[in-house]
Amino acid sequence: MSLSTEDIEKWTRDGRNKELEMSPSCSSFEVLDPHDPVISRLATQLFKKTTDYLQAEMVAGQEHYMLLEEINRLAITKYADLRSLAANLNKTLNEYNEMYAQQIQPLLQQIDQIEV
Image 1 (cartoon, rainbow, N blue to C red):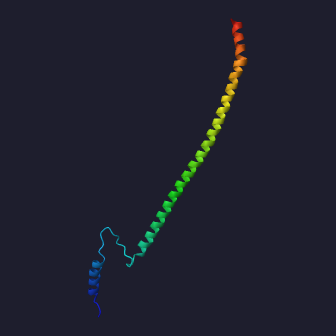
Image 2 (image 1 turned 45 degrees about the vertical axis):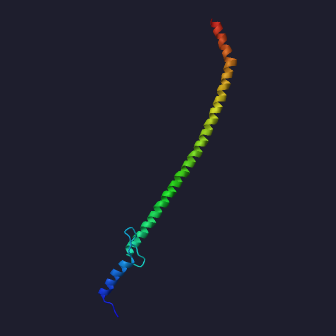
Image 3 (image 1 turned 30 degrees about the horizontal axis):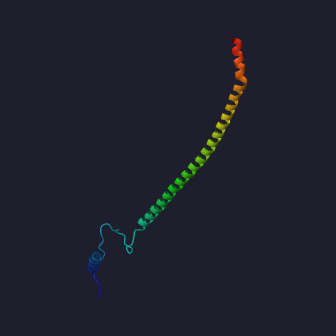
């Protein structure tokens, strides 16, 4: 018993529609259907390029984070140096104030007394 082309088409059309009722939200991809090799190649390229892009974005984010860490380390070092400098300046100013009070101020008072 051989089937005519019309019978095969009718069976395929009717049989498939009854067996594979899909909702509109389902994918139209079917494993057994032959696929266009160009579309497959393009899809593969799309996924590869998307992967490359996402990996590059992650690397860029990581590099920005590492740069911020380095900037923070440099800022900590710089502010520690500035704090040390400020402490030294404070010490030196206190010494000069003491020297003024002990040595220079009495001399200035003598000059004022002589002038009067």
